[in-house]
Length: 307
Image 1 (tube, rainbow, N blue to C red):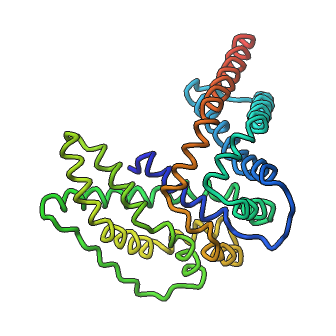
Image 2 (image 1 turned 90 degrees about the vertical axis):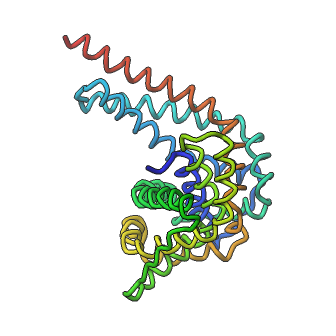
Image 3 (image 1 turned 180 degrees about the vertical axis):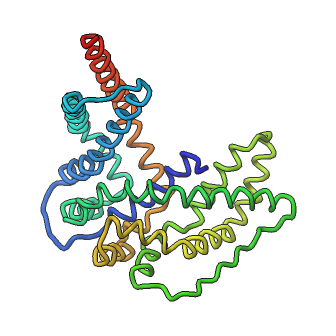
């Protein structure tokens, strides 16, 4: 199963790949205004989605059948918390801007603003989450294969070579999707995946360190495995992308590799996300908890009154 930190690593890179398309429109804003727009646009849907998922978990745990009226009441509660969270972002935008400027230039932040202000950018806000959910099973299978190869490598000191031959000719859209994913197929990602996989093994810390050092040297070979794996699964991946984007939109996303933003490393994006989380996560956890408590109390109160 894909470890949460591996999934997070994939999400960071996939999100970076998807959000950096440069729109031809030209705007003139201060960097802080651009960050405020970009950050709130990028966070609103994930927060809404997280609250909805927590709502469904509460309903499942309580085993309640929710009425239409209750759904409306719950939606109002969630909307109020979303507004509160976005207001918190506004109040802390100066701190958030400092972090953005640590990892992005002003012109790169302007590019992010232009993208989020485009039709494709607005679509991508929801699309990247849907794509990740659907791609996750594929990456779970790759992680399982990687774990098996780590064990074989420790025994035989050789990495199992997966020779995947693509016999059919790729369509233009399939080629474009591979271009979109190409920067994600990198040694940084593999090294992170290896480190997490080894860390979860029931071994002493000394052995883990030796394993990580040995296997990190073989990252290029594991990276080639990932590349072949994605080529082998390109038909399935294409179906997932085409549920969210048209062929022409997928072609537009390939322009990402023409921007300097696309050269940001997974390590940089991990540090960026970590810095942002130090500001947002404690507050998000607090508000999410309060929201779930309020929803639970509402449902329980309604049933007490009913009975």
